[in-house]
Figure 1 (cartoon, rainbow, N blue to C red):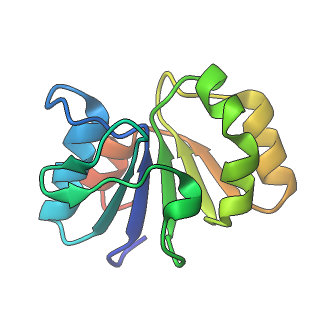
Figure 2: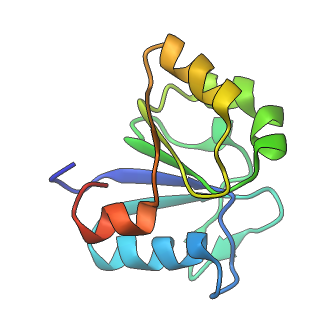
Figure 3: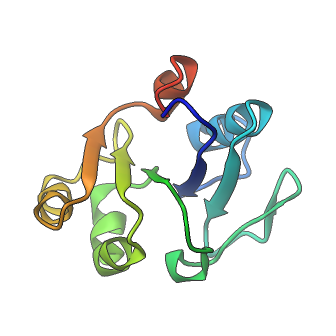
Length: 123
């Protein structure tokens, strides 16, 4: 938490008014490595966008989720298989069932705002 993390942003957007986009910019400015994930995009602010979680490189520290429970349910198996040890569900992305599955498998799960966590150096 107190170093520079590799952060995957699930549900990343190229729209400047979206919180996921704000987080990408903020994390990059603070020296974190950022890995946007969205099957509909190829780049966000010059960063390559990964189509799926399976396409991500190994060694990601944090997965921050910016999609509703219906969409994350569809990706539950991929999220579990990712092996990313810390998963943050942002406001509006909470998914109690998936959160419990992740916790049962030993993942560190949080319901929190990644923008706030980044501001207080807890991301």
